[in-house]
Image (cartoon, rainbow, N blue to C red; front, side):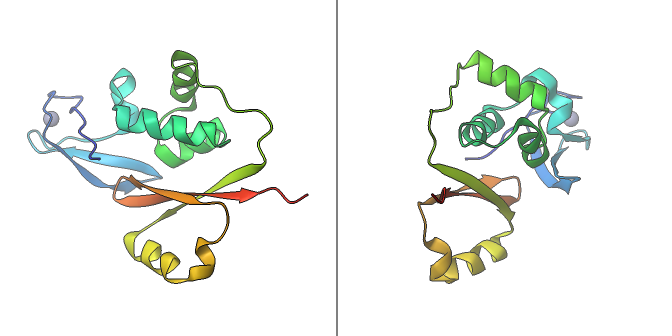
Length: 140
Ligand SMILES: [Zn+2]
């Protein structure tokens, strides 16, 4: 899934990912050369980030941590939780841990079979890196 974000300056849709600055995905507009991060988009945040933020929320990741990971403000995340009426299930017996990795780090992680044990994991694209959410059971 690719993130297509509108340039906040000229409204062009021809934007490309341009690195991660202070944990925030940066984009560059091909038309006017303007650099911007997701925060600058305000209300126009792509559903790409909305879905990822809600995914993390439902896995028990705090609003502040979501802000740090995705570069969208925790206030936005709180508003989305309200807007989409997302409810966390009760009595969670496992918790999510997450890690942001480059493609090389991800390949190395998967090479070790021991890393794949547990209750499962998903990998989603995050800017030019990958985010892995892994579930671990609480120890009784
Ligand atoms: Zn532009």
